[in-house]
Amino acid sequence: MLIKAPKGTKDILPGQSPKWQYVENTFRDLCGRYGIEEIRTPVFEHTELFQRGVGDTTDIVQKEMYIFEDHAGRSIALKPEGTAGVVRSYIENKIYADVKPAKFCYVIPCFRYEKPQAGRLREFHQLGVEIFGAGDMTADAEVISLAMDFFEELGVGDLELRINSIGCPACRAEYRKALQDFLKPHYEEFCDTCKSRFERNPMRILDCKNPHCNELAEGAPRMIDYLCDDCRSSFEELKENLGALGIAYTVDPGIVRGLDYYTKTAFEIVTNTIGAQGTVCGGGRYDHLVEELGGPATEGVGFGLGIERLLIVMEACGAPMPEKEQVDLFVAFLGDEGRKRAQSIVHDLRKKGMHAMLDVAARNIKGQFKYADRIGARFTAVIGDDEIARGEITLKDMRTSQQRQITLDELGAVLAAAKNEETAQNAETSVTAEAAGVRQGE
RNA sequence: GUGGGUGUCGUCAAGUGGUUAAGACCCAGGGUUGUGGCUCCUGUAUACGUGAGUUCGAAUCUCACCAUCCACCCCA
Image (tube, rainbow, N blue to C red):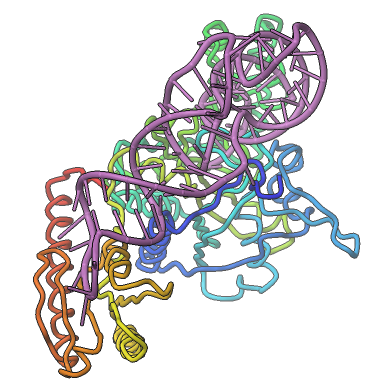
């Protein structure tokens, strides 16, 4: 137990981290082009923030939060999602006094006490975006567009954008009542889960997988038909905006976000390639959250995107992944003096931006070469008494096995040339693959 | 929380009641003098998830627990 990571958590080992860095950097870079800046807020907040923000009746708050008391008796919760913390910071730091809209992005761990399964962990990571103070649907479209651009840049295809409007508190209450009235006569006939949904979340009954429930729900009123004038025209505007951006979507009346704060726009980006947990990105509008948490009335839109799920999708659809950094030079040495020279050569090259290595495990020359091979060194240099006497080093090309004597002054140029050739080749292959829409193996 | 699958060395994987539990990969060292990848040799290891039970005897049968995977639920 001592050396077992807690249930539902995973180490991100060195072999994986280049992928994470790639994904995160791509995200930050893209956000930069959208004029969105990164915000970093604490991993834990007062429990009450989530109770008020996410909603007291939601599953997330009721049974999935990691809550503990600190030494002064405050109730603290690990972030189960990203929006509430950003809203809190927005209000606390009076960012509403700055230019609007205020746009934020973040990369955070989230924690939910759930039973782990494919694509679902207790600690997982989200990329997120929030825009405050923009009530127009162009903001919603921009947020969705960013998410779609992100997937496209990563080479992820086969995704479906589903949108819906879940109305505002006023029209939603009316709809809920109409739906319950419609379903009530058949209450006894529904499956057990649907019965439990009846009070808690009647909208969920509409996408029950039980065929009989489907029959019973046929002809049920739809949220879209109960939208008030404002919500209805907003939804039309959203579709128009998406059309203008050339973003394909399907209207899915079944989308009901599990967080109470959403209003109007709700959307999901799903894939069917990674198992049951196919929602890679989910978001929407939350026009009352800032006010609800004690700030001035301010509209909001945003999304959260699961990094673990994203990585699984990328793997599944063969999206290009970064390769391990090439070791430009390994310096093998013989003798004490050789070691000193090797250390200094390596140190010098590193300062110049080269990936240079030497043995620090006291291996003999053969072992050093073996090690150089294992770590994939492009070149291996040898420095021993012979080389010191000649004032040169032996440089071996590990691919061709050719060796030659060169001076230290020449070394830098040789390595740089090989490195350039390498990157030029990589660039060529990836561009070709992209242009042809070809899948590139890992 | 509810179901189902799985649990033998770091990894993959034989073994289905009976001597010291195969093998492969990996890792480390070596095949005489300062050189990798292939090949050959050698070596390392608290491997039968844990605990009870059945039995003369259990990795092999039973039960419980734990872990893990998948699904429901919910969501990223």
